[in-house]
Image (cartoon, rainbow, N blue to C red):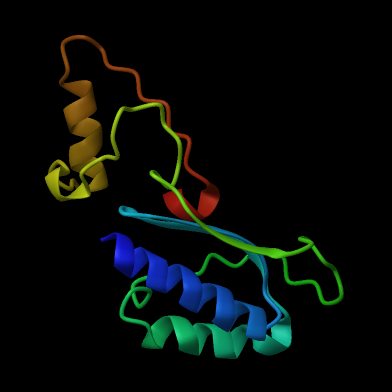
Length: 130
């Protein structure tokens, strides 16, 4: 809901700025996407804030490079969008109407069984496919 996103936007902007976090967070009804630079000394506090938030408790941090004294971003931007990632579809995907989750073996068998010889292009990052 719009009021909830507005509150989360404000809360994130305040709490992350207090930790010296820089980068970009996009908020939308289906979730969030963030690319952040966090001072290493503040990482435990960031983890604690995420764990204690009713909106963020399920968020997983995918930590990249850990380099002290490098500013990857100039400022902190927290912005609401219609969709987290622009995909060109007329409306956001309804994640509540997702298909059946398959084990890897079942996934490969389903692809092999398609008569049209379906081609799958996997564009995940390493951390998403491991």
